[in-house]
Length: 197
Image (cartoon, rainbow, N blue to C red; front, side, top):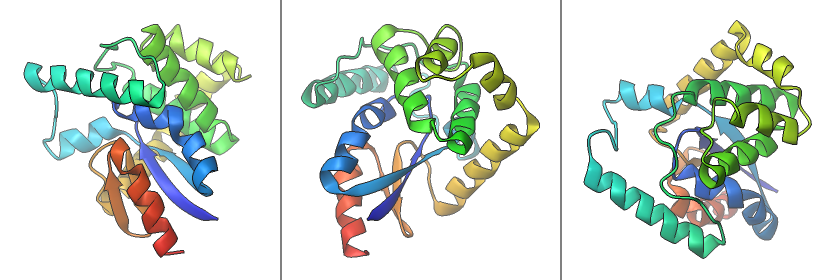
């Protein structure tokens, strides 16, 4: 079975569309996506690429575009969602714990649903505690681990790997050394994975 690296950052608006439908895509296409959280804010600041800051027309387009695409996928976000996320880094540190413990996908989907469909920003309470409790994790234990130096370093290391690969935004799919950026490139990534299998 083909494995596609799914680089994403909780805090990316368009990643909502991908996160909520990716398991269905994986099952339908017979591929595996390896969920790889990273700190997209760090990448964007380093590259002087802040896509929506002080750009109201582009921001309005983004929300309408997400709304249209979500409807096509059967998703029901409340637009606009709170944005940007003050807790972006912590949200992704929690995801790193999930990578190590095997519940990253469930947490990511739960926190995005609460963010986009419930209006509770990811990376802070009540979203953090409720999402972790929903997937059977103890919020106090997870948050203590998420704030540890080991997890802080792991997120930084994964972000460095993403940058070395050329990842500049979220979501990005990587097949071998080929990058496919954006929710709308899932099909292209799957097709490329078949060519290189």
